[in-house]
Length: 84
Figure 1: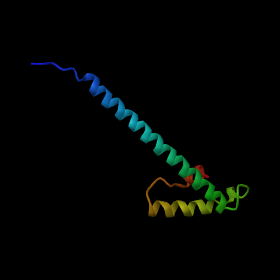
Figure 2: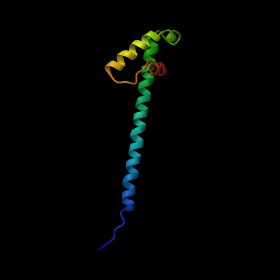
Figure 3: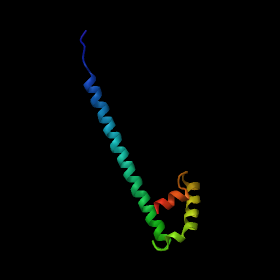
Figure 4: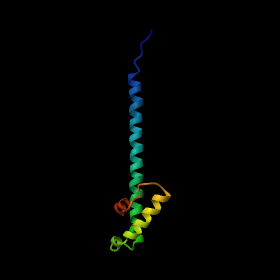
């Protein structure tokens, strides 16, 4: 019976998989960041610019309710304010 050490091959496969997951996670995080930045920019624009943005809490509440109903949880007023 010939004993072959597959440890290095197994390790290489797992290391590549971990690297792929990290790249995938980075891409997802980058996408999230870009999306949230763009949402914040649009909210400020809708509210009439940065100087008037603090007066738009009613708008944020409305958007939050609609987004939560139509998409998923997680689009709370607080989250939308943070994006803004």
